[in-house]
Image (cartoon, rainbow, N blue to C red):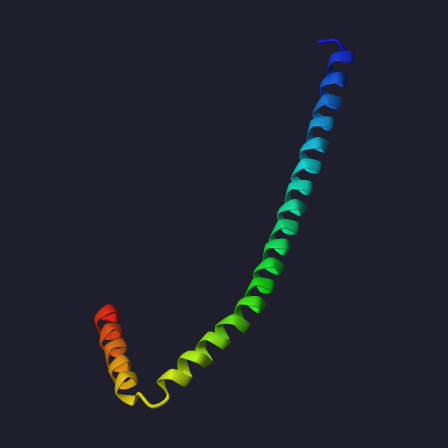
Length: 87
């Protein structure tokens, strides 16, 4: 095999490895960026949702303040459900 073909093959292999490493690095950094964007979006959504959830919980709690029978029945039902599901 002529020497110029061997040199061409070595250089082609070097270029291929270089491009492969660059692609692998950029894909890795892209995934990290997308992960952080998703994480920030999720935390912002939770922050917005918590205020709505607190208002709904407080309104519900005000309605149930004097209904201890309902609360006790609900607690017993949830306890029974947990015993059935976890055993």
